[in-house]
Image (cartoon, rainbow, N blue to C red; front, side, top):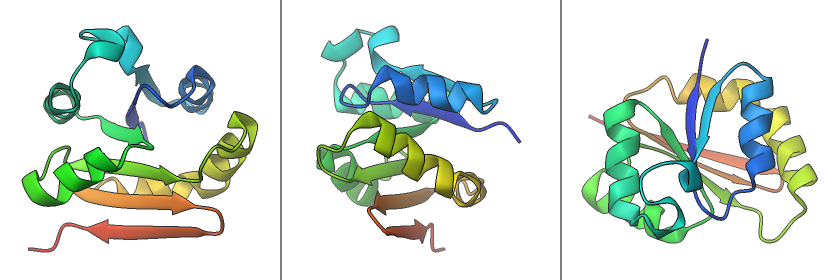
Length: 123
């Protein structure tokens, strides 16, 4: 099953390559729209219009997700300034669960060291 991710500016390009190496579609915000100058709301709109899950460390996206339902699918990385290699290891260890949960139209996942909190859309 293909998973589409849009990595925010503070997510390393190696994470994009990680997702691609696992057969998923991945793009970095620096490669679309206005690159690192793209507003969070434009990133959210682009992600929702094109079926991407936003991957970010930015709490502003989390606030927008819960207040405005944008972006509709959000993976919030709450790991601080860990090495990218460690982030990729954690993503890899949780990838099947992450992908499974993001089959929902709307979903929020917060990924931290030793935990993954999933908040699906409740209708």
